[in-house]
Length: 272
Image (cartoon, rainbow, N blue to C red; front, side):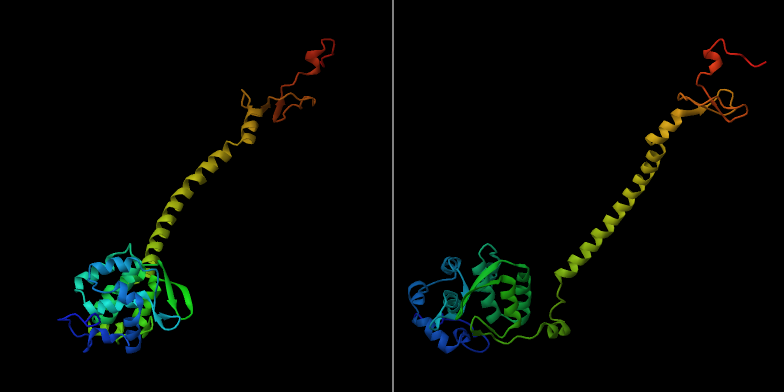
């Protein structure tokens, strides 16, 4: 009686839910120690504790021994929990192996439209998963595992039931087009680029004006202003720096303020 399907269970794809697992693998699960010790009399509530303790996903390993993941999957097929409970399993994002177990069960038992609607959001989950098979342990990710469920025909050594392709469902109007996260990211990046260009344009105007003003008032220009200034009479420019050159001839544009020889030596003859 421990290996029989719960009374009142609905047929899945026209057959007993447990028959979705191949006969050879199913018999090995019945004979495994984990099934006999930990899966006896499990309910939809107590199964959560066992799923949280999982440390890997996978099919069979070593000498065709089933993984704990497969044992709990067969137990779900046996007790057939309600749809609302499975959705809650799927929403428990803090327990990734419980989510992977619920995704596998939904893929095997739900309709095609519900499978795409429930599993496609999990493609945003990039957490690591440990996968165990005949070759030992390997590393995979939640989004890769879900993508295999939607695309591959065999996952975890279990042949998955056939479902309609998404393209056909879209053409029939049963499901809307899939939203690409990459497209949203590109559109968001374009908006950010436009705003950055606007800010850079507004910033580039002010430095140009300030540079022009600073260029006009550079130290060299200030020094030139200090050295040359208008003469009071307006006839030319007068140098304020002392100069040893002889006085400029009459009519010259520039007049030096350096003291002349006649002013220094009173004995100098003044031309008549």
